[in-house]
Amino acid sequence: MTDAVLALWRREILVFVRDRARVVGVLAQPLLFWVVFGFGFAESVTIPGSDAGYLQYLLPGMVALTVLFTAIYSTLSVVEDRQSGVLQAVLVSPQPRAAVVLGVVSGGSTLAVGQAALIGVLAPFVGLAPGLAGAAVALLACALLAVTFCALGFVMAWRLKTTRAYHAIMNVLLIPVWLLSGAFFPETGASAAVAAVMRLNPATYGVGLLRYGLHGLPDAIPGSRLGLGVCLMVSVGVAAVSVALAARVAQRPEA
Image 1: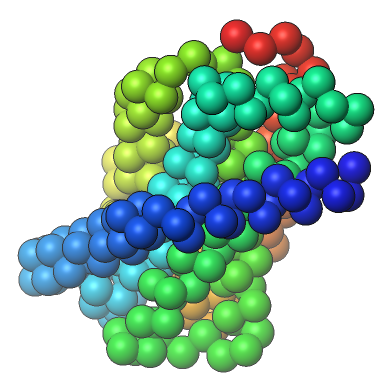
Image 2 (image 1 turned 180 degrees about the vertical axis):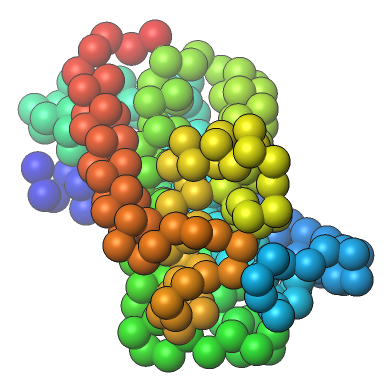
């Protein structure tokens, strides 16, 4: 099983690296959003209870966006492999189907964390000083977000027949999940109804954990009332449940 997971992991990495347009797109979109929104709303958005500027507040959100985009679209390979016949060849092998899940999720998560780290290095330029411990927590947050959304993307890809259907559904789901995670605007400045939805969004806790890391593990983070322990426990739990769900779905017949 280990050999199968490593083979699928390696294949995910190679497919991504060879697609230069995809590499550029994953990095360029969050950077463009950060520059446009960060400077565009710098004078009009204030973070309640914090002196942080909007560029500083928005950077963890851009790191999270990179993770979400990379993680979700890495599982597009499941649909493409079905169409090309590669997936069927893997499924008829003696390897357990859990190996397919772990290979795809580990490959997509590695890519997502690597891409997010390239955006995260901009933290010192906006006044963030995470330190070694904070950087480790930020990487952990990226990894947990990546595992969660790779696994959820696998669940969707397993049931869909075409890449067009996958793109349509993910475009509808991905941006609202990101917007309502505290990445774009603070929970403390939202209405009660929106704040309640944000608390139900699993990405909120991953973004909160990421923000704790990039801010150097403070007692509280700007724009949120969530504690570090709560963000960590919920993020770990959601990631575990997502992988278990993906493994369960993989045992069923394909769509």
